[in-house]
Length: 187
Image (cartoon, rainbow, N blue to C red; front, side, top):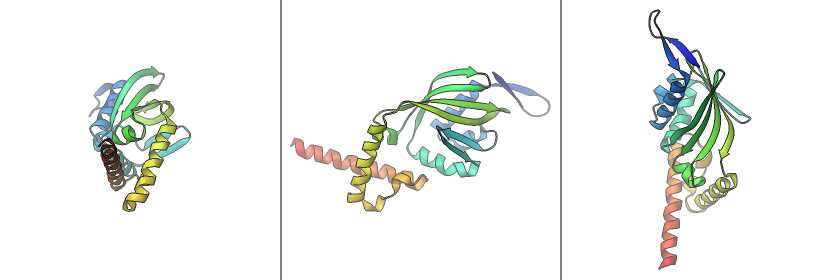
C-alpha cells in the first residue's frame, strides 16, 4: 500500500505506509513530540481493546510527556499490510514496565493510514502481558509508598510529567529500600 501526499505545488511524492509506521516508532523512541503529532492526520486516536481515546494534538502533549519520562523503547517486531491497514506486533520496554512487568510487553496493533498520515491506532491484543505480575508489583509499590513516602501518594493515577517523575521516584525509593534490606539480610 502506498500513500500519496502533496509536497508543494502539484508535485506528489509516494510515501510508503510502513515508512510512516517506522517514523512513528522512531519519534516515540526519541521522544520527539512534534515529529510524532505531525504523523497524525488530525486528532490522535488510540483504541485499547474497548477503551477509546481521542486527543487533540495539545491534549496529547501531557500523556506524551508522561510516557517520555520513563525513556521507553518501542520496536516493531513484525508488520503486515492488510488492505488499507498495517498490522503490527510491537514491543515496549521502559523503566516503569521493567519494574511492574519485569520484561517488555508485546501488543498486536492495527494502524490505519489515511490522507498521508496516521488516522488511528488500535491495540487489539496483549500478546505477552502478565497481568497478575503487573498488578502484584503495582500493589506492593503503592502500599509501600503509602506507608513510607506518603508525599508521593497518587502517583499511580497522575499521567502528567510531574506524575511520571513521582512514579520514577517511588520506584527508586522502593528499589533502594529493597536493596538495602537484602544487603542487611546477607550480612
